[in-house]
Image (cartoon, rainbow, N blue to C red; front, side):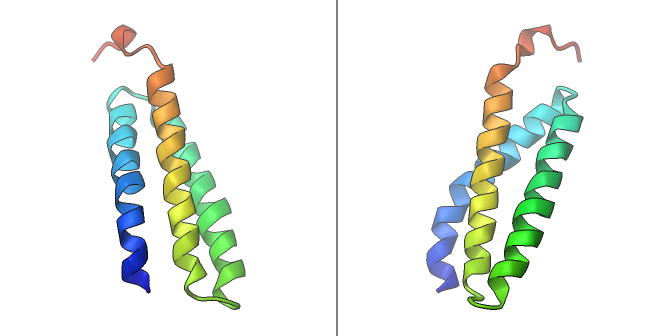
Length: 88
């Protein structure tokens, strides 16, 4: 059952890794920290604890939702910023 969810996790996980790394490289570390904190605390910990007792497989669904949330949040922030003004 878990292996059937893995293909759906690969794309949002890769997107979140790439955009988070790009944002960190441009100095936007606080936004990455906040999104990760909200995703981990609100989504994974709270959602995982609520879903683990009735249906253990649903915990992976919570991870999937968190990875989609992070990927979307990082992509939104990356495309919203003007990266030409960043001095490295």
